[in-house]
Image (cartoon, rainbow, N blue to C red; front, side, top):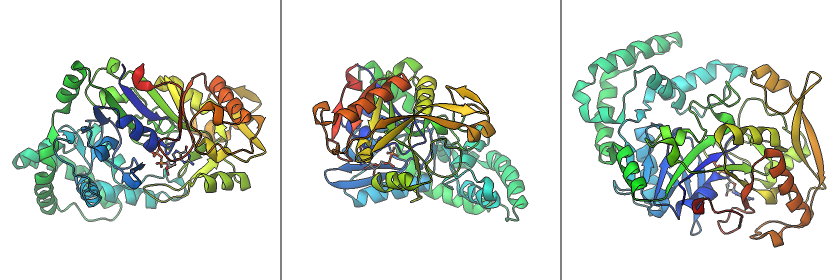
Length: 429
Ligand code: GDP
């Protein structure tokens, strides 16, 4: 039996919510290890839709859930998500939610800074969700952050506040903003501390203990490998490492604890916001993928850019992240096309490449080399076995596997949990 890490193999929004929910229903513990309240998972459980931005997906079913040290935590966003779930009948308690006391906090001025920078950058926008996640990670690495454990020692906060305000007041002055209201911040922290502290603890101990007792741990990644701060399409990336390796470092377990790495990939490609996207379709096919796939962001409502499946990118994600098997989602969105295409390589200034180059200018300049396949007219929606798939759809999946050099472990054919073809059970490995 393996623990399982679930990560996005593209630019996020791969449909992780459904797969994570299915795995979470069989896990003893669900752990988030990076990112912030920008995960945007949609879960449909018992006919009710839950939207989670920060909390691990296990929370909906009452599975003990952990926010690991690699996450940056907005305590006010936490409170409102907990209250929203409570309105849907889900009670979050210190038994069901544990938060690493070493998490760095996202503070109100981080959010301000995110917005100010995006507004000032015009066409050079990174496309952040303006939630302060990037600035909070900057302060963490800059060793200025206020962490969850500091909330229990607010009387000792002055030296940290000196460092933080010196740094941020200079930045704010550059944008013509007033300095941080230190007294107001202290009041807000004291108020929110009472809500957060009951959940806070050294979660690495719980996790190591769970592991020693043979419990199944599910590591729930947010965003996708192509948004990884090191391996993604820099600078159009997120502020954390989204690769599976982070599941260990971002939670306090060793790398061998991770086990099976399940990479989620859509049967086509989407991207939200700015940044290179070689297979993007600016035509009616792209429109059709977006409409059929309902490609609008869960958190931001932004329309996603759409294009054909890029096997070069997913192959690269699988390699840098050590993906054991792929969950191929939204196959049904490709139903009814006369022709489907897969990008199998790139052309760059007369050369052929079998990988995505590192420099942003090269990433923007590559032209996809496509393989064309006959599409299928029958519906795959709701298929739960290979026998229910048209031959052409099976051919498509097999070709994807060959090109990405990684087996398909699951195929998803509708938003419903049961509408899944299970090839290989990640937990059974
Ligand atoms: P995540 O951030 O990776 O969890 O992705 P999102 O939740 O933003 O996007 C997934 C969306 O696609 C949700 O609305 C799901 O209900 C839906 N979805 C997931 N799997 C499938 C599938 O196989 N087919 C179709 N048509 N929709 C799916």
